[in-house]
Length: 383
Image (cartoon, rainbow, N blue to C red; front, side, top):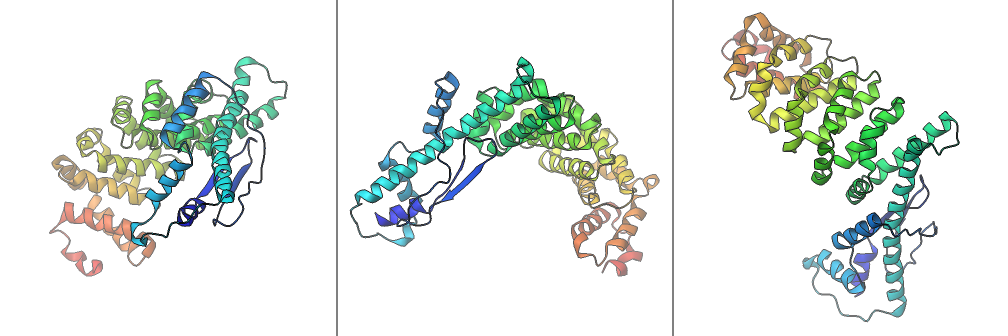
């Protein structure tokens, strides 16, 4: 039993307390040390339908309902290689500690729901006109609410609960188009945090039409941070999500990525090229689509711009387009494109630069695929 307590006791418990921006981290590191939490704010309970649903859902998903359940969880987490431990009776003191620790865990989870409700109340003030603060104070308060929600929704359960509370619908309908750029990009960031690795949330967001709005922000918002965060959200909705990819294609998403690679923002260029490479790698059936758009010519044009680290992803995308794709290979070999000489020069520039090894590998791979047998003059340089 002492081994079970140690297993339970060595769990790091992370909870957000009731205040908007106070994060309390408390860790129990041994079965013989007292458990301590630095914040003892009371829990606010509201018997709404949404909270009832979320509470039941959390209990079913994650948390043992009693002490026996916790002990069973600890047994399953233990390593069988450790061998059996001698049975020892659990003292009343240890039972009391364990019950209190578990109560604090559940209390902390419900505190997170309360925090999200408070943040949403702040964000909804604009709808109701209840706020009495000046415009700058209101914006600061809403920005803080978004930042808190983004942190909380790194927890997948909280992301699902925010959807249940209507928070994502609020972001899409009110804040992606907000006049304040700081609120637009924070709304996009929150959408990305919730959608990442969460198919249920992704389907909901796609159903309320978020992708066209995000693509428009990526393509034309005057504020570079908004464009970057919007593309981040697009990425979270289309990678490994067939419905998201279908919507992406129907709204000419590859053209948005192409224009992103030609923007003045280094981050946007890098993220656009990386997403293009990822989609071509994961969905080879889309090669013909992008080739028909003149993507090979556009990518080579990007490579002729002043050298940048994101060129590595551009070269990777070109390598994808010549693999098992005759038209892509034909386009790259077109003498009018001048790709052979461009690659020869790039290989020469990158030789001996350890930080550019992957880009160099892509260059050599593309040269081999497209111009094999035409490189005898360069063999000595490549060795």
